[in-house]
Image 1 (tube, rainbow, N blue to C red):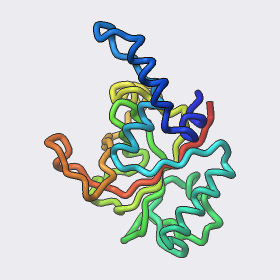
Image 2: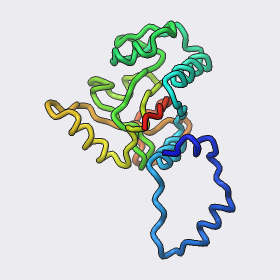
Image 3: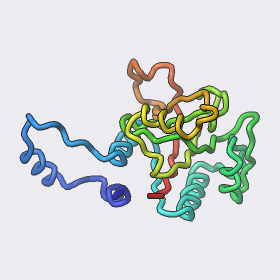
Image 4: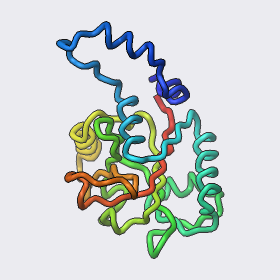
Length: 201
């Protein structure tokens, strides 16, 4: 996929960009970015914190660093996924689905490249609204969950859940508290969000 190399060197050579622009006419359609580049750009633009990992050991190390950075050890954590809570067991955290918690640990349905959002459903948040969840999110996802559009993500949800489609499907894409909201952002809930992205392709 080449995502790792692009993340290590996010600032592309400006002369290369100028050369590309000079080679293309204004009458040609714009070059379409790969989904991973598009998501990375839009997610960062939305204010999300992005941690790319090549192995599960790197995921656990990044998770540990988040806890250290925020002093989140020995805290209550909202988590509805038992597989996820067992995967991140051993960090002296109390996983619960009740009461006030320090952060929300979750998976997601898809990562949407077009707007850098994260697609969630009742599989992750049950019937809770985003504003009922903790302010701090840690999302664990894999590169195979990258999709171009929300429609594509919804199609995957439908195909994956033929017997019963999950309810409460929503997206979150506002990760900056001091960012001025545009018309489409009103009513959404701002979250401090870390994304642990595991390479699985």
